[in-house]
Length: 229
Image 1 (cartoon, one colour):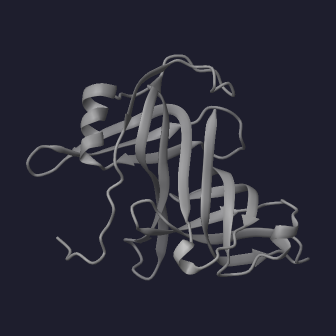
Image 2: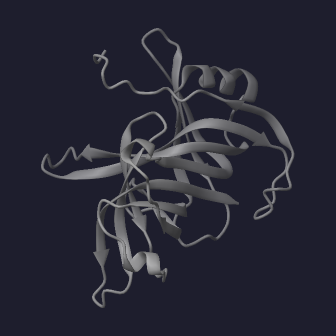
């Protein structure tokens, strides 16, 4: 099984428990590889570290962890296993990072077309076998880059129940609830840009497998200065 995420971003919010010793949840503002920004919810649990004692808002931290789904919600949160403060010499040399690595089984594969009948989006869930914790290990994924979509269809021939290794980045968006206009919820998905299929797979032995064809795509950068189409 493989379920990893690495983040570098800015702390927005933290909540301490009553004895002021352990940090539980906080939000991290991250710039994605496509230049968009996202707010990712993180759970730090019972990690004890000198770094945690000094966490303050608007400071930058590097985080290693794994993904899990929130109960009764569409938001993916990051369970933190390591956290370290990052110091930048100046604002211009600031580096932010958002990379997900998953190994699992494809489910609920869908291909969506535009008005011309061309496939412009592939979505699926990836199921991660194992007993990492009691949370559901199914994560929504999407492929949006057109050239990568063509490779997925023509070369990789991705289908349900395929075992794949992927790289991507975690995106969380605020969604307005239909039934109550004043309330919002958050929904997460993984935007994918690198894949390979796997012939044989043993849980917790992901270095011991045979790779099929590898495909990857460019991450399309968002230009916020150009007019909206």
